Amino acid sequence: MKRILLPLVFVGAYLFSFSLTSFAAIEAEDFSSEELRLRYQTLVDETRCPKCQNQNLAGSDSPISADLRGQIRRLLHEGSSDQEIADYLVARYGDYVLYRPRWQSSTYVLWLGPIILLLLAAAVVFTVVRRRRDDAVGEGDIDKKNVLNAAEQAALDQVLDHSPISHSPISNDRINNERSAS
Amino acid sequence: MERLKLFIPLLIFILLAVALYFGLDRDPSAMPSALIDKSVPAFTLPSLADEETPVTETFLTEKLFQGEAALLNVWATWCVSCRMEHRYLMDLAKLGVPIVGLNYKDERGAAQRWLVELGDPYREVIFDAEGSLGLDLGVFGAPETYVVDGQGMIRYKYVGVVDERVWQQKIAPVFHGLQESPTP
Image (cartoon, rainbow over all chains, first blue to last red; front, side, top):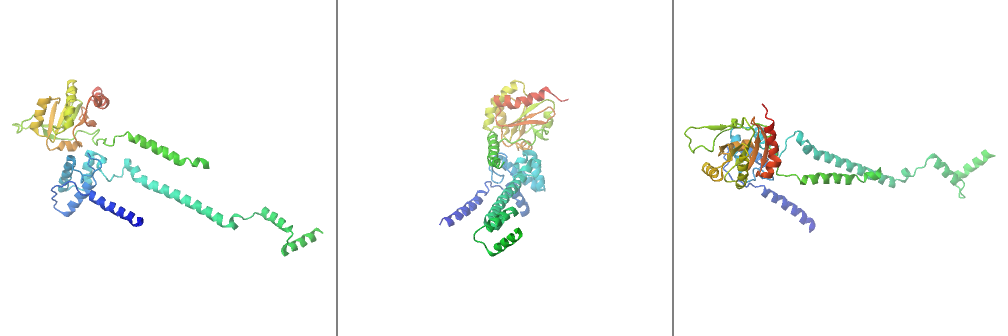
């Protein structure tokens, strides 16, 4: 039951978030073309209200937002480009009004920060996973871990040579040894 | 060395905590004006003192700010905090601080009555019924007070009610600095 319920809650929250972005302001918006209306919509969506800082122009009822919406409409009708309108707003209210910050020296950290953090996290995960895998291989593969060096091998042969239970190759060796000794 | 590595997360946490702690003291609504060290925008607007339909049309322009350092105070009769602020502006005017008013999106009659009833601290009041100069200045709510130097450059902006404390701590140092070193 829980497995079904949780995704449902998320989907519900997602849908609800759409209803929150509906527009608080109702004004006469007579645009000569659909293209102009869409550009206006994007502009008021991506511009922050200077007075009420957690709202965009589209969602704010404050007088200053109404003024700025009117100004944006006027500029659009006069044929200003989106860039010119953004410049106009920034010249008066600062970079602050842009919800989509520009690429400039004061925003490098803002734009690059997440990428750098992501790369860092990826590096950490990569290192941890590789180390863990190396450890796992070491434990599993006896041949690799317990390989003897020449001195150890010789010592082992020595022990085996003198063991009471001797195998034929060793006894051969012993015979050889005795021969060479005599 | 291996052991020291264990302290890295703690170190990161401390750095983050310190950064966030200092962030607490910052005023999130404080918005630096985009017009600091820029000229007062060009404008041509009537004076509030004019009659409703003036016989001879005289307009105020940005040249109003040439000559001496002055305050530019944005106010309106619909602005409740402006009424609170007004008393202190009267005090400043008595001290000889030149204040230019910007009557922002207001009715001329109501604004004129306000000055008669409460007193007039302003050298001159620009009547900006449409809020066009307000928009060019980046005004987003009255009261706002700008410090403008003798060349008409905006040096400082304060959003909110100016009182004794604000004047002493924030505006006066900037304003007196401009008065002491008048550039030719």
